[in-house]
Image (cartoon, rainbow, N blue to C red; front, side, top):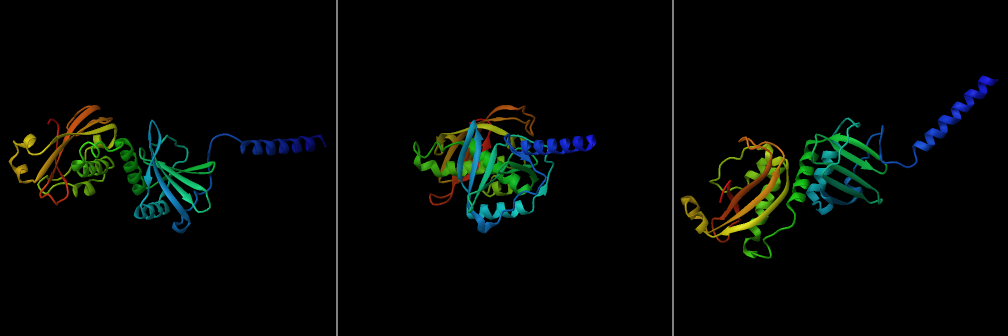
Length: 266
């Protein structure tokens, strides 16, 4: 009889501990599968980046939402015991009012959070998009539109180029280069940068008078890009503060701006 009373007491104690484990504390890693994402059930998708504090950058486009849903559906499971503070996140707001948050941009895995549960997954496409979001957050607001409206479109091309290179999308970045630029090569040092600052430093043909082929362009401009790299470059430059000068050109007054070259000195 005494043994029975002891057994009953142990069962009750375990039950109380189970109830307490579900109260309070941070989101816990779940043994269950992460929630599904169905396109018709999504109300909105927001992109945010961590730059000192979380900043909402923009809403996802229709094509980006489609990419997120398809990439999420085919993502692989990953070790749920790993954790980190990711620099970028995708917040998927459902029609029900619930949200599913996908964090990443700095690791081989992404963390999915819903309610008080979290899961780790791995998707190359989601990783690329989250790295792009993180790069957009590092660039900050445009600096040219108010001061030099004529060259605001050039800065927009430069910012797009920088985001693509920083997130490893070299094929897409190549499309923004002028025909005589040459082939891009992957530089890991550009995929791990912070504190990016862009400013317009020169316009017209005077600053580029020494390069004959650039005289064929109707207009030119040069931007200084200052950033901190956390990885050694292909040329052996150690991690640290870097300065680059990016030249853009227009073949005709009506044509689009394109990237002519990236220089280490003006």
